[in-house]
Length: 145
Image 1 (cartoon, rainbow, N blue to C red):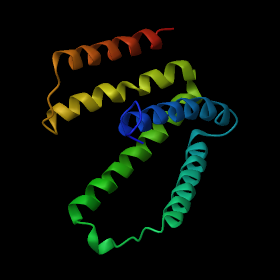
Image 2: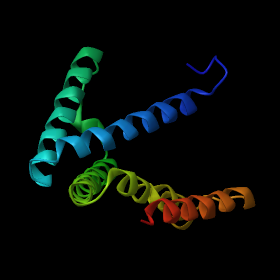
Image 3: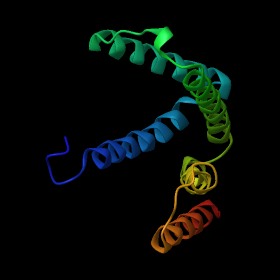
Image 4: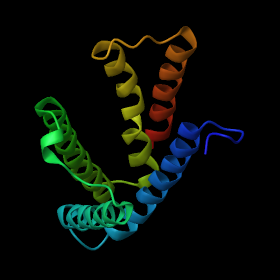
């Protein structure tokens, strides 16, 4: 997929953004008449079944012994963070408008940039920092009623 006009990572990232937008709208419609926790459970079950199907279809084998304890720890912690994020996201969608909840949720972009610098030792250029500031400003403007 990287032989075209765009690098493969960008194509996948754009697809991710499109699906995330659909997620917000569809979740808002789905959470209207049930609790946020039930909605999160259903969503999680669907994602789990989809991933099991993709894994089986790929023919890839899973060898737990080949996964280092450090890798396992970080993946488990990532899973817990994902679960917490989804629970909070569905509660926010239950209580507020999707057009405001989704942009605030995207402050994760700003936090990833900051955590990348602080935890991973990544470096951001001046233009990158400007982007962080503009995203933050955009979130604030979108969140104002």
